[in-house]
Image 1 (cartoon, rainbow, N blue to C red):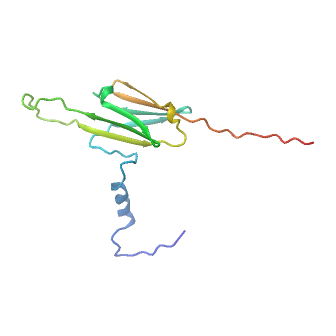
Image 2: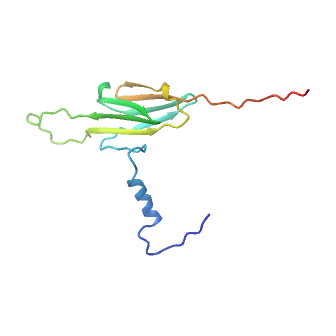
Image 3: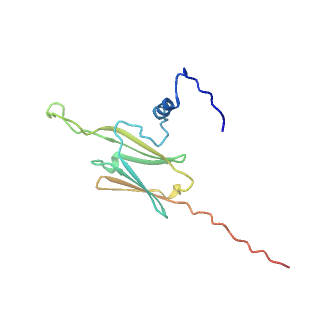
Length: 143
């Protein structure tokens, strides 16, 4: 462990650096990169991982799921169907727009066996685990 000299007039403190790191995340991180971002749950089992994303009101054609360079990307767009001339909205609380969620896949995920299905506004992405290389016991024979 190294000794760090404290400087009382330094422009940033360790506490400030936490906020800087949070606010400067790149778009490739698994953090949300959109105004509207669907909520997700990630479950792990012995066989693999499952990602559940809430996408109410979206059709299959509105959603794109892809894998590139070890990053799983869920993207799409929610649209507000309204006629500005005829409709008289008093309040709009639902979020609309393009969204992108990215998740880094580790070495444990078999990229060739990823599948996705949609039911009742929930996107379910199944990610199988790669077969683990089991240690092999080698018997030593005496001659």
